[in-house]
Length: 259
Length: 303
Image 1 (cartoon, one colour):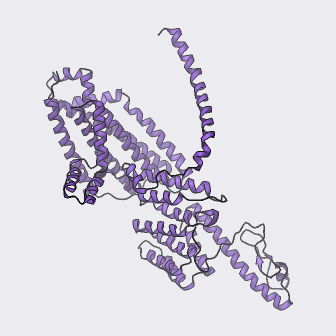
Image 2 (cartoon, rainbow over the protein chains, first blue to last red):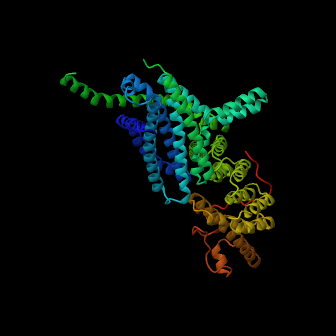
Image 3 (cartoon, helix red, strand yellow):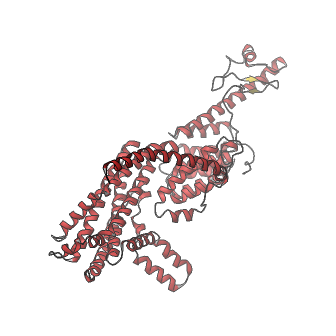
């Protein structure tokens, strides 16, 4: 990160905090407390499972909503408020601005996710028994959610470089949903038996980000283990995809006529 | 906005918002009253396809599985013990929740109970219970409890002692399985249907779980089996009495007077047994003990 992206990132984080986006933590806390109290009364044998499933799902959903809705406004908001022009008049390159914006939102999501993870840990402590070794998988699942959010943020930022916030939201959401079904898309091509369609769906499978990779919620809930190799592979996958999107976004944004 | 008008707006909100909420609540109650009958008649499940629910869950399969499991528990809980109640949606709910989360062992174990219990106690579908548990074993090969559950279902619900023995034996191959599974496999194969074997199975169920629901059920069964054993013993003594005195005893007191019993025998709940005119002993009508239907003869018909 260059010296100029840091201040942009910090200011993006400050702006998000000023916009009270961290208020969602109150909602999350209420959901966790409610679940911890209610589930034991209305179900059988899944108190701990529900806390983990609900907690991780809430972290993921809240994070996704933030990543998409804040991500698509990262550039357009600066243009609307005309702050982008004064910023770009300073010695900062456009890609540095974009990377700074991206890092700022990622920082916001990271802080938000960390607080929610603490809430989840507190809820787990409440339902007992005390933490066990397999609970470490929950932290890996949270890390995977962060990787997923990093990817979604990069997607939102990429679309926001050449499209309106509304369209960027739709595009990002569309790619996310398609990415969740990546495996099914490839299977669909296999089922048709048509070589052209098979090749097309296979290409699409590799082209769109595979969000299914980052889903470790069920494994974490059942105390399963996640091999370190998978953690490393997913990290690399997310890093490569984010790099690809940021390079593409920078190219689009650099070529954009802002007059 | 001037200060007085601001105050007016504030007061209007303080008074108006609760009033409007009250009106909305009253209206909703009326709407509910009109539509409840219609809603109750509708099937509990809009989507019966596990694959469709899985797609719609957008990757949050585990959470949706928990929701479906809770729904299944609630569905069963609101119907169990109700005369004429049907459990038509129970299997689809369990099918969906175990497809969404194949590791949800609790759904296989309790789901099998919900499905297999006869009469008002459940769906009376031991065949589906067996299918569910077999699916659970395939998805969770290290969970020997599921093999034990399968053995129990074959033994108690299907009266298929060989299949039961095979299930126990399969479970015993699991390195984590306790030694009693192997013993049970041999026992069931050799003496399926005997009171002793039934008691052994329920004792292991009782000892093998910390779940209060299952423990209560097993304890109830064990009390019933103990009462059945007592009755068999009393029947023998009654026959002995008949041989000596040419008539059946009218009560357990007469058995004691004849020196056949050291005292008045009581059932596990403390109620004395009664003896009928045919010399057969019975539970006291006031006793809460229930003698379980022993698995004998051909398997029961499924609903």
